[in-house]
Length: 218
Image 1 (spheres, rainbow, N blue to C red):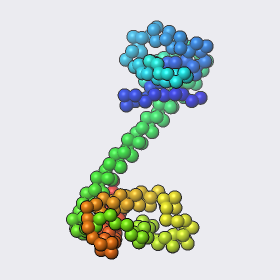
Image 2: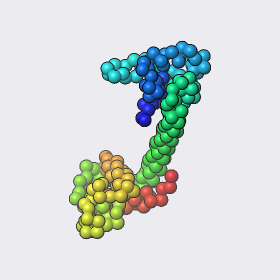
Image 3: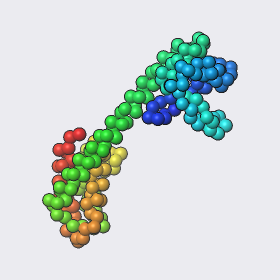
């Protein structure tokens, strides 16, 4: 039995209307209002009003409850399904919190990685001292393939039976390629060299970038 939750104020909530529907009340809206009116003094600290979309696609002000409020709310619903809904609801709250925590941690890791890479690239720029602009060269893709996978495009086709595209790369290789291409683009801004000089220069930079990438530990 799926329950519909609302994310608000950095947390998760569920409406009394939703709970009454799942509990099988014939008139869930009036029942949700009745429970609120009877127990407002106990529920007011654990609920807020939010505008939620209804079945007619319009938004209406609806009272929603956090985990504490929703558990108290269900305890006042004398229905056979009450215990079952309570267990499912608690499990859903836990799952939503865990997922949110994982996403938050991933964003933090991403920011740390970006800062670490930026610092590394700045050092490489100063060290290599390259100059290139609007550089497009067929060998760049071949070189990137070798740096990211350890194989040439031909070897990749022969050994893995895939082309040098993100679909043919592992998750780690795909991340590495994205980072490499991003910083290659940043690296080539406002530079001026001939194509040949730029290719040699970029090849040196790219190799150093991959070396720096491997050393980063978040």
